[in-house]
Structures are given as structure tokens and as C-alpha cells.
Length: 465
View 1 (spheres, rainbow, N blue to C red):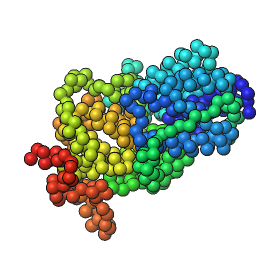
View 2 (view 1 turned 120 degrees about the vertical axis):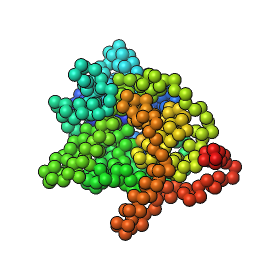
View 3 (view 1 turned 30 degrees about the horizontal axis):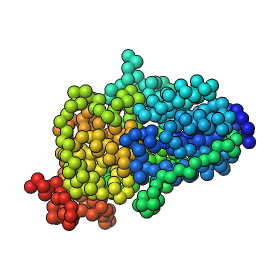
View 4 (view 1 turned 90 degrees about the vertical axis):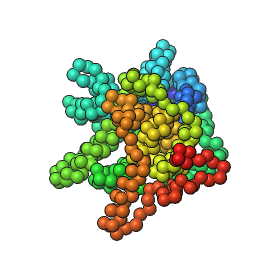
């Protein structure tokens, strides 16, 4: 154990030991003190939701176990000011360096800049790294050195960069521990007793943690990926990667995902498997959208608060708490919308296609402020992600330069009919039976408007007949 001159590795949304540049830098420098600081009050209105906190709790547990196996524990601190807590850890451990990985949401950008200023003034060496993106936002510009304003041009530039994303780093073989004898961990409380009973169901479907993230990635690449182009819109089966919560908490690096998927693409190209190649291109596009969300957040830090198209800043949204409540509770009177919202509340998850349907209904039928919907997604999704959610809601609202036109609506009734037609074709071709998506979160499609439970407000379809 080192008794001085150690390095602090400040874990945030990079909860893994593999392909972690900050951890690798700390290991190269000598003794390491791994620290996680839980300061949710710093997030203001974006205090993490119940299911997100459940995931974080379990992810940290696995990270601590992995670090201990390598030689050092994870020190956890409860705080209302991350920088003050870092200074306390520096004082108690004798650390001379701090390493951390970049974040790109506006709150973190401000905090990280302030942290570097304050810590450097105290004589601490501070280094930060890219662990969350293929390319840093400031490295991707047009021919005039300006940021791109549309996704297609941004992603085309990423795919044509003169150098590939860095290859993922291997985990360290061992870690020399710093002296934490005067730096005890705080007990972090992520859920109350009532929340524990609700969260118990989540463990049946999800396995947080960096090693489980790698298993999920392997399962997807060796299974659903090859038919992703055909099956990705099916909301009733496991046809997508389910990697988004793992990516949000940094349990697996996007560079590792990119490299392994590209290897699969080369393999299928050599085989002449055009369907496999198309699937890879479409999946990588979804990775590109995640990249673009960070790119937008970095270049437009207000994107979670106001539209990127300035002339829509004063759009006359309908401020109606009754509509908002009906949407949240899954009582709009539109079966596919209501099934999606009930699934969200019950599981903390929504298929991407259903997210589009419920958010499109929210802003284009109910014409409620998109920031309300984004905040509700933040409170209820396992993979709640400020940058991705802001991009998605702005896109649906038509407030991005390349967003959907406001009058383009994903009619939930039409989407439900298309879904049932496609499902019946699937059943007839394969001779199999399969429950409708909306029946997992029961809605009587044929007699929906009659379903108004006692002591509840009428559905929106009933109110407007």
C-alpha cells in the first residue's frame, strides 16, 4: 500500500475497469484511490429517478467488487458539493493527481471546468480523458471549422474521419492501492423501503454492472444483430441490443461496441451477407445518434431547455395538467399509447418505436410542452440520459434543424393497426402464436373507451366525444 503521492480516479458515468482511460492513467502513475461521489442535489431538477438509482446502486456494487479483486476498494462519498469532497479526499489520502473521464451534459461541463480551476489552484495535477465517445465534439467540424447542424452530415464526417476511433483498452492486471485508512466510505442510500419493493421486480429483467454489459453486448452481436434491419421495429420481442442503460452508466464503452460490431461487419462482407451489412449500418447509426446527442449538448448547452430553432422558442404549447396526467397514467384512450405508458411505469423501459409513438402523441396531438415529456422520461426510464432524451424530444417536436416536421404525426391508431397486421402475417407464416404488445400491459382494443375505472378521470377520447 502506498502512503502518499497517489492518484485519485474519480468515477462518474464510467463504471467499468475495462477501456477506462482515467483508470489506466492512474494505474500507470502508481498507487490509486478510486472514488465515487454521490451528489444528486447538484443535478437540480434532474435528480435521478427511482429506477435509475436502482441501476446505479447495483452497478457500483459490481465496480467495487471488481476493483477489490484488482487490489483496491472503491471509496464512496455522499456530498452536496463534489469538488469539496474531492478536496477532502486529497487531504486525507495525500493524493497529488486526479484523473477523470469527460462528460458532456451542461451541468457536468460547468462542474468539471470549475473542478479543474479549483484543484489546479491547490497544486493538484488534473487530467481528463475521452471514454464516452468515438470522437471528441471539438474534433468533428465542417470544412469551415464549424460544428455540423444536421445528424446526417455529422455522422458522415465521423465515418470518414482520417483516423479510426481508438481501440478499447484492456483492464489492468492489478492496481496498487493508495492509503485510504483516513478516508472511510460513506454509506450511500439510493432507495427507500417503498422503492425497494417496487425495484425488486427490475432484477428479473435486468442485470446492471460492467461484466453483465459485456455479456449483453456479446449476446446481441452473436444473435439479434444479423436481423436488426428487419426486426428492430418489433416492440414485442428482444430484437434490439438493450445496451442503452449500460452505455449511460459507462459499463461498456462505445468504442468497444463500435469495434466489435465493425469486426462483425467485415466478416459478413467477406461472406457476401448483404443483410448483415445493412443491419450493422443501421445499428451503428443508432450509436451515431448517441454521439450526436453529446455533440449537440456540447455545442448547444441549452438544448435540454429550449429549442435549437429560435423561432419556435415561443410556440404556444397547451399547458394542461389534466392531459399530462392522462398521458402519464396511460389513460389517453389510445391503446398503443396507453400500453406504452403503462409499460414505462411498470418496467422503466420502452422500445424505441413506442417511445416515438408516445412522444409524438404528447407533442403533436396533446401539444404539451416537450420539456414536460422529457422530464418525465428522465424520472422513469432505466436509461434516462439528458443528452439523448433532449435530442429525441427536440427531434420529435420539430425544433431541430433536421427534426421532424411538426405536422408529421405517428398516428397511434394507425401504428397499432400496422403492428397487428404485421404480427398476423408473422403468425401465419411461422404457424406460431404470440401475444400482442399492448396485451402485456392490458388494453381492450375493441372496447377501450368503456374502460374508465372508478374514481379516475375519463380518458381523453371520452372527454372529447
